[in-house]
Length: 224
Image (cartoon, rainbow, N blue to C red; front, side, top):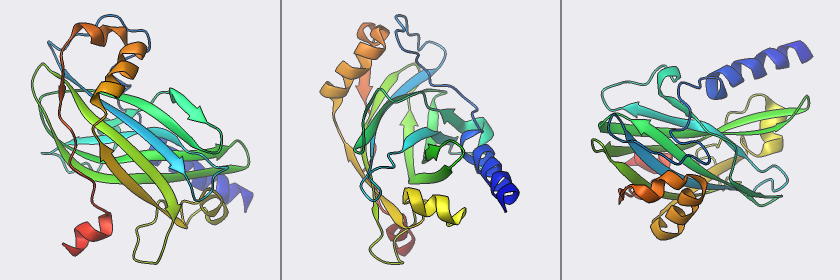
């Protein structure tokens, strides 16, 4: 039983977190930023587990696929997140994400999340975004702020935050019994101060607004 669980956990790790095709575009303390070859997109994300408050989530990364691709293989399109820049115990974690991209249209598919207590619990979930973004050539753009909440599902029509398996782990973290809510916000002034404090080179380039459209729940997308 234990052996089977470990195998399943390893499969999940490779499926969600292990597919680290790209690092974040920016590194903390970076003083020089160049968009002559590729563009950069910035996104801030706050994640709060209100369903299981002692199980606050970390972000593993973001799946960003060119519109021309089916994205059946995450590996080339997965952007691995760094550590959160801010967190409060039993309340939330916050991330400053940056992506280096060729000009074009992309599908921001999902954000991977994880809750882990080593050797005890490993649980995974996906924040289902499925929204398109347009990246202009040689630009740095701000995509906005995502306020994400994991809450208990009201009924079976609401999309689960994660799979049912492994049963105990997924339930303990709230993924199998919970669902994600996402609000897109324009916090340009506030966020740019945060980004510039972490990545000083942003003070020397123009950052354009390109705010994501408001999020639509997956079950409502299907209904429409």
